[in-house]
Length: 592
Image (cartoon, rainbow, N blue to C red; front, side):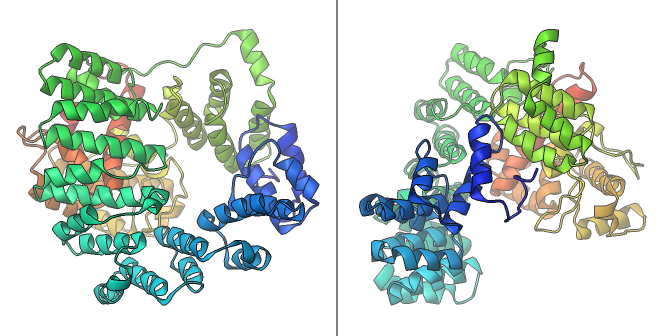
């Protein structure tokens, strides 16, 4: 508990000793990073530092700097420079740490290194950090940072600032990224696409491929809206490969989806979808790839192959596309797999493990909040037997947040702990006001909105289990004819769920039971529902492909939200009634 806290008084030796003594402990990377930070802020003998990093390279920027200092003190300037440059290019460093680096290693850093740091902070939207780096560069570099700041802040001077530096910086990737983003935000989509396609982006773009893909995928959907599918495909296909697995999968999927649904080229689409299985082991992504391989095979006239792909996707019963694949095959069963059965001896041995005892100790000492990050880390590393015992322990305590954390981590690794990934407890009893939303829908939304955290607070001031904003809460209360008490959104979980469930019930009535529109309305607002129906058609209309409609949602957060809550809904129906049939297609269509 002490090591997990933010206590700055814990020294390096304590962290290092724990890491050495407990190589299988969850959160070990967190402890290593803290040990690395102590090595930088509390200088040690070079031998101590080199010994710590002898078995594993540094995880973070401060660890790289600590190792660089030790190497420098041992006379290995070339190796020291390698680690300094790596930390300087991409590390998140405070102004104080930057000053320390420059004082100690400034002679090892070139103008190219300072430009690399400026660019990395620009892509992270860290204007203050990028300005600090730009001060060591040219006036043109400083002008790029100022233009980027204006675009981020949506300032009226953005265009003028970009134009002022265009002749000097027009080929710089950071400038091009900023100008493309500005053009897209100004709805000058064709110009943004033309600039992106014509730009000769140098290799440094691959260092920031994640940021470039996030911008590209927004632009891609805007191009599809404008009927420019071929250009959209090229922009998706030709993106530098992102470093994050989820973004690599997304980029590959997007290119395949456009090839199939907008270019009518099943063969080309299949090539993209088939690559996804080589990129990831995540069940949600594998289900998505297999489902769309089925759609591509079906479009190509090979029904037998299509059924094989749908069958592969359907094995991921808790995944949105796995459920859609089951529906495509005409299956009605959505029952979740049961956890593994442990024998008495195995269970007894597992229950004696330090990790299980640690969870019990945290509860016994009133530190239940520390259980959640602990078991979340455990879910990413522990074996299925240990996870089963841990899941049973936290579920026995009726700790929905911890149960979800264990189950979700296990599910991502393909372990059959689905019942724990969808806990059917965690919401308080509440009195419905007006029409009542089904418990399965309320739980599905709460799982996605707050992960059952009663105290959850978003940057948009949404609060509690159902993430209700004061403005939405006031509107709901006025509609229901009840008093609105904004303070209760955070202090009274039952009141929060009461308002959130009432909003869901009203949305269901408004949109004729079409759950896609309900969830868009809950997440992005009713105005967006109207806007996107006008743009993409009405998903209640049987001639509109509702699956494509969801994929065309321009807000990534909302698009993912709809898919996650739809899969949650099917799982929760099964949790509350094992005989409940799979209803995802009917839910997405509604009664029009």
